[in-house]
Image (cartoon, rainbow, N blue to C red):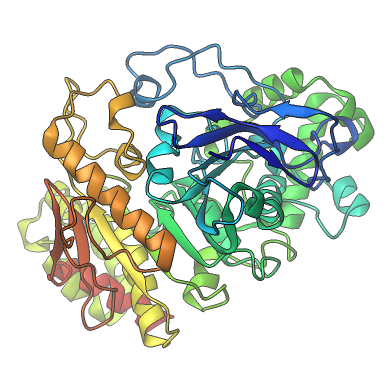
Length: 510
């Protein structure tokens, strides 16, 4: 097994995973610590080290709110089980799982970005264990990056100091991790010319940002976006903030520095990281995603979703989808008259068709709102799939809907992020009483993902040797998806009438 590897900065030693045929390398630095003068700067090159770096443990997590122990919070209950997880501003490290026996194997590579709204999250979350994918012949890399105010603050002084990289430091960390993989992964038995990037939630949104950044030529060959491609359906629907302009974000930074009690960037860089985090948590509404992606005309040159739709992106195969219960969009109207007025404003001469689909004749506003409720993720993905097909890009989009029955005393449904246990086939680490059907489903989902990572096509044989249910690319004529329920089933069904109406309206306006 490949237990010792020479990287560009020095030698690292890994440990056998639970499966001794896999070696894990944890806490490998890919950039210099983003502290002191490097706070709010693009990631700088990692320093060389002497001797052998023992890559045995995960590095501290990025600066973020401590979740504590709250049995009433489903996400804390599900994943954040250790309230004492070490945290440090010095956080730019990655982890590698490799099945390679020598550096000459050229195995496909999967680089993963975690989610958490760009405000929290970390690579050491137990669902992100790369061992099961590595057992299928994949070199798995999970990349840590700066979050919240540390990763996404802007300020006029920052722009003046580094106009080539004035914002999006968390995304630039992800990019630096990718560049490190491109330069070093061959030493771990990986193929630098066969890299797939993937992420879920804000990690999926990060993949969308990387896909649409003009800076990323040649860094990856395909992409996976899980629950990370979303656009508003109705006015007032809350979606990730990708529309912040640099000037507005800079002004927010000026106000935050005033809140910190400092008058310059130099002073702000001298503040203790814990103090900066505490003040950020007190400043305005932290969870409003105030600190997020900025259109800086360098890394991010527009709204990433719109850039994707308009093919201003790296044209690579994409696997994408959502869970069946997350992020539903509901009209904000509180009365029937408000609902009618909204319909006319949004759809003009087609308003009556929308109102009929929403059963306006019932006169029941709650019934109408319920009928109008749609998945914002499904809406956005279907638009992307149709745009990709009609523009003849020549690359496929594979669409899925995760609709499995999830056990537990809390009867959670297919809540946001639950599919991660299945993607990485890490169900055994979860407290939920999963049964044989869940383990079978996880095995097959992980197989589909790994097949896609290897070739850009999820289809192939199960580990039992049998052909898996065939998954066809999304097209305008065949807008079908793979449904992961009790088992994978490719649903050759048209979208619901309301969804078809909303998609037609989108293309009518755009």
